[in-house]
Length: 155
Image (cartoon, rainbow, N blue to C red; front, top):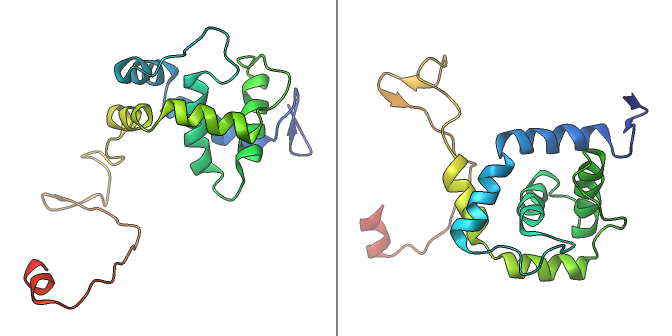
């Protein structure tokens, strides 16, 4: 299957693994439900960038944050072709991606998140709780705010 980092049928093994984990964590039926719930279905049959592909594309942007639109689209399209669920011969252009993202909007992605976002650690996960409290992690984001009386009271 793997030969020098390239998977038979095209694509890089790490792309298949990353996108495979994404697809198993966010099943297609969840994506389709989110699209229906938000009313963002395809405007025409046979479109080159259907809404479900664009939802996965938006999520793939987070996986491959250092790559531009075209590179992420190429990775996603290559993987989808390898899985035989993408029948387009050419990768989409950045302009087509932008238009498809504008049509999609943020609502389907927010709905997918609402459906699948759950704590990773369960009650029996060692180290996940301190007594009755679930331990949480924050990404270290810090905000500087003006030193005002109202801000001092709020903190």
